[in-house]
Length: 358
Image: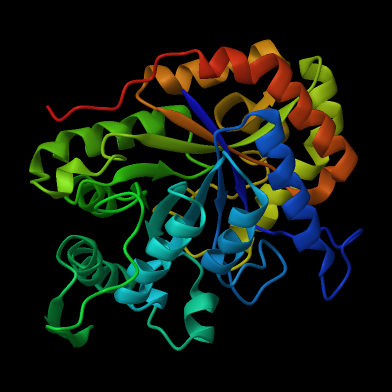
C-alpha cells in the first residue's frame, strides 16, 4: 500500500503573515522531509484567490521546481482544475514535468468545487462538469495521437500535420492519470476513461466504500488503449491525519486545529465539495469526537494503522495524508517522523492490489 501527502500551500496566519511568502518555503521543506522519511508521493493542489485554504495557482510550475530538489518521491498534480485550463496545455505541461522529474510525475484531474475560483477566471461554474467531460477525451487523444482537431461548444482547435504535441513524456503514452470524483457522474467518468480514482478528505468510510463500488462497477466500460493507464484501478483516499503516542495526546495536540480547519473548509465558498460530502455542517457533526469516529485518522500509531486497514479492506490502494498548518512546523515534523517510524513500514508492507473490472 502506498502513502502520500497532499499539500495545499495553506498559510498559517499566526506564523505566515500576509503576503504569506513563508508558506511556500515551509511547504518545500515539508516535501523534502517527506522524501527523506520514505513517503511514496506528494500531491500539489491547485487553488486561486484565497488565503483560507491554499495559495497555489500553478502546480505544474511548482512541481518543476521540486523535480530539481528531489530524487525518488513521486511528484503529483492533485488536482488540476480541468475547466480552468486548455486541455492541450495540461498535456504539454504534464509531459514537461514528467521529463524534468525523470518519469516521476502523476496527474490528477478534477472539475473544481470553489465557485469564486471560476468567477475570478471568467469561467462558468455551473457547466464545469460539461467542460471537463469535453476536455477529457481531448487530453487522452493529445497523449495518444499527438495530432487532433476539436470542434464543439467548449473547444475549437486544430493540430494538423506537420505539427504535433510536444514535449513527449518519459512515461509512455502518458504518466499515471487519476480523477477526483465524488458524484456518480464523475465516478462513472473516471472508470469509463480508465483513470485512477481519488477520494477527498471528508466522506466517511461507508461512503468511500460506496464510491469505490460505483467506480468498480463501471470499470468494464473502459476500452483500449485507455484501460492501459497505469493508474487504472488505483484508489487514492485523502485523509486528515495526526499521529501521537496515544489517542489522548493526539486529541490534545490536534483537536482545536483540525476542527477549525474542517469548519473553515466547509464554510468558505466550497459549494458542494466533491458532491454532497459537506451536507452536514452542524457543530455536532464537525466535533472532534465525531470526526475521529467517522472521518479523520487521528490517534496512536496502532489506531491509525487500524483505520488505514479499514480503508484498504474496502478497496483503497493508497492513502494521501493531509493536515492543516495550525500545529506549527515543529509539531508537524514530529508527527510526520512518528508516522514514518511507526505507521509507514506497516502500511507499505500491506498488499493492496489494484481493482479489476468485474
